[in-house]
Amino acid sequence: MKNIKDTIQKKNGHLKEKVLQFGEGNFLRAFVDWMIDEANDERHFDGSVVIVQPIERGMVDRINDQNGMYTLIMRGLENGEKTEKVKAITSVSRGINPFEDYEGYMAMAESGDLQVIVSNTTEAGISYVEGDKLEDPLPKAFPAKICKFLYHRYKHFDGDKERGILLLPVELIDNNGGELERIVKQYASEWNLEPAFITWLDEACSFANTLVDRIVTGYPRDEVEAYSEKFGYEDNLMVTSEVFNLWVIEADKKYAQMFPIQKTSANVIWTDDARPYKKRKVRILNGAHTSTVLSAYLSGFDFVGQFIEDADYNTYLKALIFDEIIPTIDLPDDELKAFADAVFERFGNPFIKHRLLDISLNSVSKFTARCLPSLLDYKAEKGVLPVRMTYALAALLKFYDVKEEEEGFFGVRENGEKYPVKDDRKNLQFFEKIWQEKDITILVERILANKDLWYQDLTEVEGLKEAVTTHLHNILTLGTKEMLKSL
Ligand SMILES: NC(=O)c1ccc[n+]([C@@H]2O[C@H](COP(=O)([O-])OP(=O)(O)OC[C@H]3O[C@@H](n4cnc5c(N)ncnc54)[C@H](O)[C@@H]3O)[C@@H](O)[C@H]2O)c1
Ligand SMILES: O=P(O)(O)OC[C@@H](O)[C@@H](O)[C@H](O)[C@H](O)CO
Image (cartoon, rainbow, N blue to C red; front, side, top):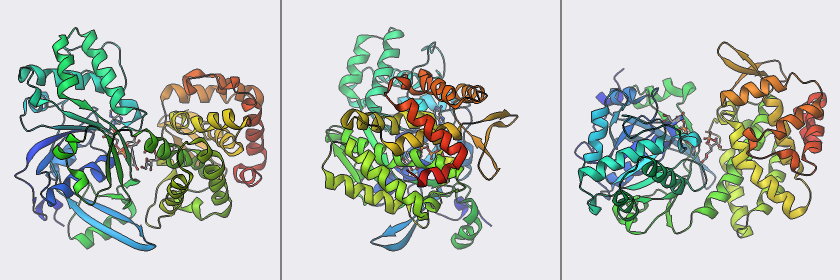
């Protein structure tokens, strides 16, 4: 069977390369590149995307093998009706591996066509790494790479304010644009770059805070053959997602003219304040994922859709969202409830097979960022601890009862199956060691006291140690699901 590149005509081959994208993962390809594809189809943008691989191991070769093209399959319910929309995405002009083609990568800094930089380097990407230098061809930290790239551009164009860049990081951390800007400036100061460069960053560039929302389930492993048959071509980069999409961008409205993706059917909001949207989404949708999937996986489920169908998990999740998370968010009640109802519908999407093990990746930092704020706010407001959220923390501890083997760290679920646990190696080593402790009270105390995990000593939260110890004890004796039913 022929490949997509030999079957589909690249309709936008003539476009100017206006966007540089750090990250070649499923999410960006099913979200940003799709929006740009729509904007090109409707002749609002006329720009293509150059994808840069942010870390040494990646897949830009595979992207180039397909001439940047791939198929996006969007599936879901619209007004209760099942819907499937298929689109061959042709907005990506090419991929660059900067570890192999440094010149090609830096040439982009000199491009007069370039207007926008998008990034998704996971929650780990926007961070400071000590020791990165301007002389390093590719500094390790992503913000250091950006600082060097922008400095090169600034020098090349002699500080021309017309050559600034709109930066749109989509990493799911608080204040993503602000953080990227802060660390870029930290490197600029450490590297003694001239003050005029900082002025250029301030006046010609914009680091926008953004919030993204779309469930992207990636390569449809089990359905690839059927889809290839249907499309009449082979595509190694097929990606599946839900139909729902939302991109909230906090930036000056002038940028909406330059990058007019809101003119398409994509759901894009340009705003002065993205924080309420972010809080609502991260606490309700991502918080619900992280507080449920570990327990559900231990109980024997593999996909989100399965636990939504289960009466006990459904009841647990409703109470968790409506009684424990929503009261901690300061937004109109009807808006929050509408969003939560939509999340239930999205989790129950009959087409979406969202693997619990995929969602479980890096659950410690996810719990800290996505669940802990709700738990602590609830305690502060009501004076008592939220029972389901504390249960979720106990389930996390059980999920991280791991042992290291040659291929990584593994836990064992209640049906005896082994499962991989993926997280920071230091965290996993800590959990392996601590689980040798047989006294549950001591075990919980040591885990909650570890500030490297939670950025604070959780034993200082009144009653938390006791609540988690009781839940964990019951999980170990009654079983994860039996314990959940009793909440
Ligand atoms: N899949 C979704 O439903 C979804 C939705 C919204 C946001 N996201 C966010 O997108 C991120 C990636 O998800 P995906 O589905 O594209 O995964 P993926 O595995 O397909 O892609 C991961 C991407 O992250 C990059 N990356 C990994 N580690 C990095 C590091 N240390 N520094 C810099 N870059 C790094 C990789 O190069 C790759 O481009 C997740 O962290 C998630 O928070 C995902
Ligand atoms: O993608 P992660 O691994 O950061 O988190 C897992 C899910 O919670 C996440 O992918 C959601 O599906 C997504 O954030 C929806 O917009």
